[in-house]
Length: 283
Length: 346
Image 1 (cartoon, each protein chain N blue to C red):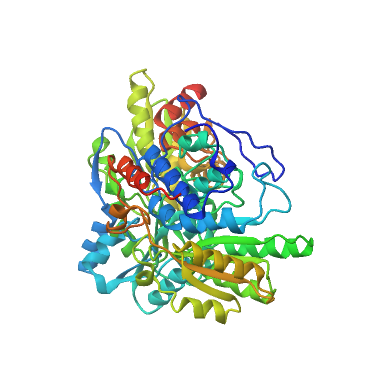
Image 2 (spheres, one colour):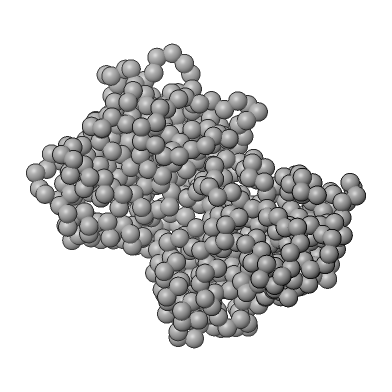
């Protein structure tokens, strides 16, 4: 693909942005013949609302001091974030096909030193929220009004460090910290709720002192409302948005597949997935 | 190779790797490529099941990685003795300690990075200090994934060698893994074992049919007059392959397999390294800091045995992401890289 970048089309709808993110993620999966494409398809709506509604950033200056920090605690979701960063114009589309290649800037697990817009090195799960606490404390100390967003997974709810950070954020009244939990109910060994259940999850976050919302993470209107509430709330407390998402969302034949941490995609199915997307392109 | 250090004020430049440079990253779950060897599926899982049939004390725990540590084989055979602890390595280790206190022999599995880095204090105090018989078995040792530093356990020996009571095992192949399991059970104390999982090559018996794993023992797999390679883990396979290759050029390489990193079999190492006229080389899938190489060096020097000595291992840096064959070449632990290093030292 070449020509005008999608980021230069400011009037594109959020559903279309989500579609563009999905399509890029599938293209990256196609390049390597593997990847966490199920997670990427599931979280695409969250990323579309983040990068095209909620976040302040400058595509041509990813280290702009006033930017909202977006932390990808879940390093293996890099395929999804690269898609959003390309869509946002922070990464060039030409690099998409280097995903996972030796010496690419787009390694399969996200790392800060490799990629503009990748704020932290995630992947050792359960670390993003704690780093977010520190960044939120630092921004407040510097009188910088930027927000810190931490995107984490339901699996990370098992790590004790997540709850240390949650308690710390509330204790320090970090109203500039927004945690997004992608709840797709899937982790390495199976369904999250059957591996180590975190329910009742909203009650837990609330009891830890967080302003808590739980929304359909594939409903863009609901996400917009939740992100607006989280940013504009006057309460001196951190905010969490639990997003219930569907793995493989947007590609019905993959949605229907038995779910796994690595969703199975046969070699001939990448193009088929792109074809399905192309038939459902939003305006 | 691109040197990367975190610099918040760096200039970002687009980067398209040239076709010759780029490659395909190995999946995290990919088995180690081993050309010319038969592969055995899930040797750890099957050996643990066999052992557990006659020993009711054995239980299995995992931190959301049963499928990726071959413990799912055990979970299917003994669902009532399998405990899924979720993505929570610290409580898995503490709970394993608790079960050991009550008479069980827990096998606790995760990735090597998470055991060595995240759960270290829990292993130190709840398990090692109490000398409890918990067996910590960890996949993705050293450089066996292209995912980058979050999953590359390049310093686990260095972390664990300082821990009193803890036995450290680095098996070479499917035979080693399978034979180590009963030895771990028989050993009344804590063990950290690096795991090769999935389809694991069967290497040593092809070179040395009589080989038998013994905890705490190094074994000479092949004799040679020019070079002695002391190796552990899959680097023993690489050393054997290098030795076969070098023989064609008239270079005679002995291979001493040292699967127990701690306690080190100092008697065998001193006896072998003390034979005059050989270059002594250590080879490990680990940073050159704090691993097998330094353990052997310390043994030799403090015992007055001073052959010409070199170490093969990973450099003191966070390693790149990429395809494993690329990275093994880049960091000097492929068969080709081992050979060229040894030739350079001779």
